[in-house]
Length: 281
Image (cartoon, rainbow, N blue to C red; front, side, top):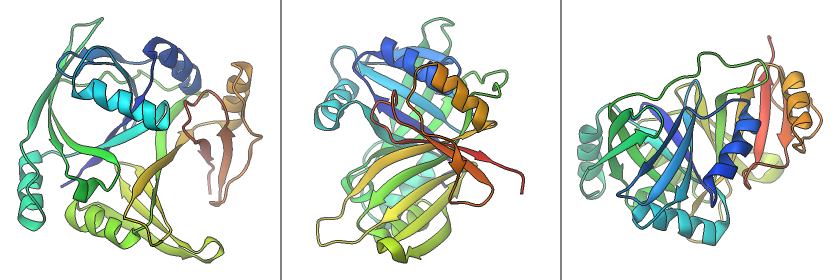
């Protein structure tokens, strides 16, 4: 049903400045610059081997502009949402409506790149609160055109999303939606005694949605936390970022065996950002 973590959405005030900062962070340039006139937004996209990263800013009036402005007003610039991809959006709509609730109509989207005039088209299915539980998340099926892929990823660039971190106070409910409704593989469900919670790993398209579950008596709430990015050579990437002026912690061994990690502490637009290198085992 759900085939991939299609892309991440980041809200910013000044897209030109954000594009410069993320180009330095990622070690590469965006592959797409465009706008959604009907939504009142302008975007810049960085493409990775397993997902893409969309920075979004308000430009005019529309539902998209309202989303960006509300997100920045409430939480500041940063990670706003994520989008799940499917090859058959009609079928998943039928499944959700049959099992849970009416989800409304499938909408059509279109974007054009400023430089190439290439057009991409897609279908969206926006999800009810019962399924999003505080997250901005929707489903997408791409129907025309593709994002360019970098011809190669330099040794010091970021090349893949390792995992997205989500917090929840209702891990059982999260499992019911993401495993049972969406059909995403639950690869790990582990209780972590030292902090009294659960760790859930949902795996798809060579990345992970890592869910940190701590139950409480408050209303059900899921929230985005941070990102972990895969690099080929962390020592060299660390040097590049330090030279670019980023504040970054020393490289150290990760909690997972055969990994090295480092945390980027500045220039991330309020997104907790971990870099990770997977070493040969």
